Length: 285
Image (cartoon, rainbow, N blue to C red):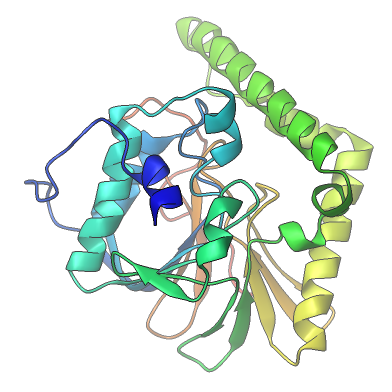
């Protein structure tokens, strides 16, 4: 536990029980990933607003919740990041089952898989059964990234470059906001415009979906590539819940087993992602 505490117990303290209004919408299940607490580009303000206004029976933290790589380079933990951690712990206190599947950026927690800390189950992977009986493999997804598995130095270099792109995004957003223009993401544009990046996403999605199908499952829920999506690949359903750096998305399941992607934009927060509450992509037939 000592190795975890330095990340989840930063110096800033906020009361565990506050007067925040109770959630306005209930879901059977919520999946979030790639929050990157500890990274300057993390939109903790929007995630906190989402968590405070949405409750669920089960909350999955599908990896890269804490960015250990960024924190090793330079410590960054503002009050908003602390509040996200405390809000998750408050949900535990209120009876929410919280399941944490560590990713590559919070791989420090993988040594604790199979244990429970502060009411949070830490697991390497999990099989989620939807209300309508679908069995979905829940993993972060870095296991299917050749760069992560075979060239870790290149993965760290890519993480550094991504941080710089996010910082440039903030500068561009400030200029565009001053000119009355809407938010536009340079890093997201590059990921869609560069042919190799598009091909990488397609290969990743296919590999993850095939792995779930090979295990006799109906589909997979993952994160890692910061690309929210719902699609059918072969005979498997592929769900990616996106991220809280650019897209500000979560995957939610209702009482009937219907899953959709919600893009969150708090009316009182600085616009950081396009779309609005409730935008969704339905499960393909």
